[in-house]
Image (cartoon, rainbow, N blue to C red; front, side, top):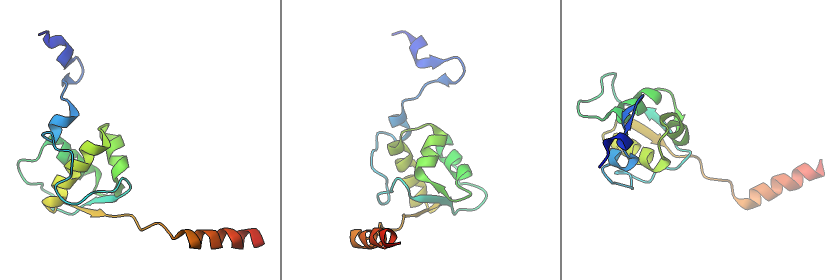
Length: 118
């Protein structure tokens, strides 16, 4: 097999995204919504044994950051980032705040009706 196709001159060896999660597709903790807010909750020194992607997530989430924004900044598939954030959540290194529930359709219809009445 030719090793050249597995190397990139600038980045070095290319690793398929599913290897970052060891083939897992579901987060270790609970399901994490796409617009969930992630914030680092651990101390300043991360524990030993975390992968580089985990460390980048911890650095990026010192301020509240949406899961989709983390995935975009890491340039990784959202499913992979969900699993990685789930790992950090299980270790209590990040907090995951779910988005508020969507308003009831009747409330939205009342708002529209009220706006039309203006």
